[in-house]
Length: 158
Image 1 (cartoon, helix red, strand yellow):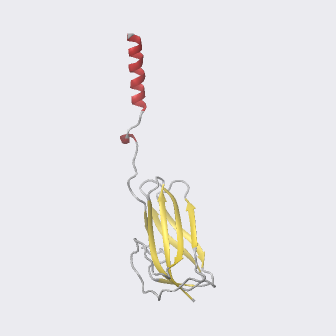
Image 2 (cartoon, helix red, strand yellow):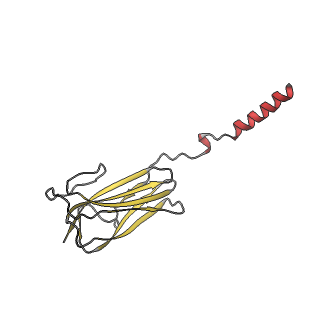
Image 3 (cartoon, helix red, strand yellow):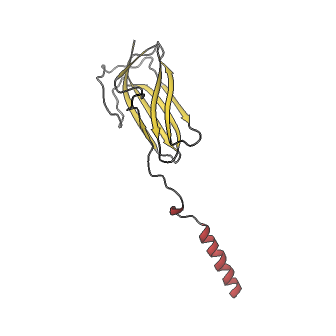
């Protein structure tokens, strides 16, 4: 009887000791950051892009532990919608119906768990797309799933 109690006590102690607690691991409670507000950041708010040209969209992203992925979304703003994180709004053209708008959405993975990265995505603006108001939306996700976004008003012209 004492032997069974001793074995139960030893195995119970080992079981409890093998369980990890929150203090044993680092908890990520910070969102990654994303900015175009530096000299190489592109596009800046209210920037005008030309149809038929190619541009390198550039943003700086950081995280306290590890970055996992990022994305770029270019879409029309012919209906004057907004995004909750827009820093500034530009003078908008009248509301209109899209006929052949530019729609660009791409997701990219990051290897090697960087804590800093400069996004550089080359995008060619087709010559036959609708001109007018557009949004450039960057998104970044860290290894634990935290996400940050920023959206910039731009214009596409002839």
